[in-house]
Length: 280
Image (cartoon, rainbow, N blue to C red; front, side, top):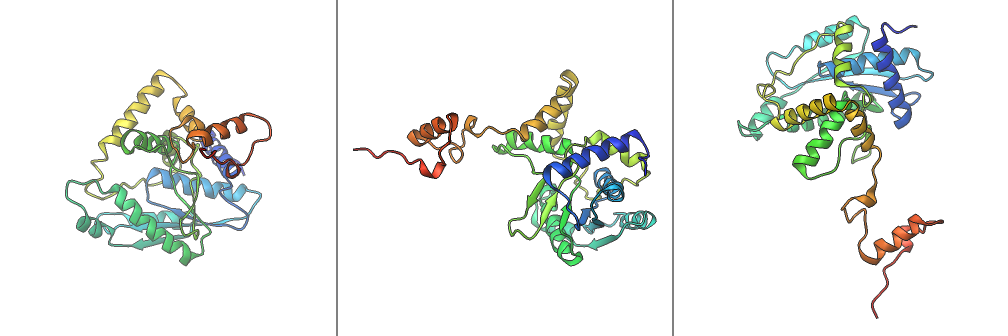
């Protein structure tokens, strides 16, 4: 089986790299793809289907679309497209939109709350369809934008993991497109003739000004210094705790100094064995 284009081959290679490096999909997995109808989730579904037919392991796919309840959402188009391509699909109708309207002020941006509510629905459905993994369509740009958003506006140095075990350890969330750029996902969805469906939430036209600012910043930096995005993604996987200010990672006082000496020398001593000296 050959790839349909150089773009498909490139995306498949990057996705395979992520799957191998982060152990995202294993033999016998049933992978549930969160299919919103946007370019990213379509690209994820199409790519995993291509890899499923070529992979040395066996795994199955099921697409799940969470309908938030907005009147004009084209869930029928999603169902029809999946049927035409032989993809198992489930449409889950919810009243998330009404819940958001009740909980938030009219001026608030609902995207974060909507995402959490939809995630809860996906967790529930994963158990119902017997999914061992939940795959989401976050791509390279999402990872680095989230890093900067948290850094600039949340006072936290974090992005998102390629593989995440839920707090109750019942679910494993994977993001196989971590090495795929947003521009690649957009082009691939169009190349495959997939119907890109926008969100019908009335607030989605007013995406966070903070996120838009971060997008522009990254775009400007990439134009001036090609490779900035790749460098930022590499930084997420190249953390040096001793060079940060978090005292949970850097013990203070003599304990810190003792640990630093131990780690810099041969035969590092376990942290629990390093105890601060008591004053006389």
